[in-house]
Length: 258
Image (cartoon, rainbow, N blue to C red; front, side, top):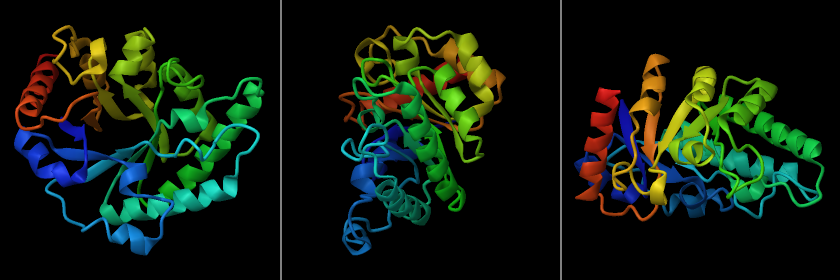
């Protein structure tokens, strides 16, 4: 299994030393879809000690996907830029969490919100399809967003969009916070293309809380012959030299024992 860490690409050498296989970047700060190509090229040398396999935080919070003031043309232009840069870097997965951008405003019709999300995802999937990139929707717990909170709900959007370049992500932290059942994950495995991991207690890096057991979670992935990758997305995780080595070693042990 390939394990990566959400971090800046500039720290890829540290991640490699820790045993990571790839970097997961931040779309907004790495691909910078709202700036010109010339300005973006000035911040990316094209060199990295590890592949930038994935990138999260797809859409800025003020570029709304849901609500009364959605500008789909602006969203399209932004996505075209991001996807083109992802293709250039070789990034294979873009993560659609973007809780602030997709949150349903108070009093806004929920069915209309669902249609807006589907419209956005269809548009994004078409752009990703032409670049060899997969867009994955991330369920976020109800404390962070009020729509697409579970793997089961995410799967309904995957089915509605019905595009091979639009699939699903599961994040162990959100999964556990929402008290989802492993049976629900099993039902979704045909559409799971990327995984995030962090302990439920404190949302720290895997193993750091000493209370998390990933083996049942990993067992579902292994039974389904999951062929994607797994990224550590945790809070206050910056010591890749020391803590990073422990985290990656812990994940390999949990995977092998699952």
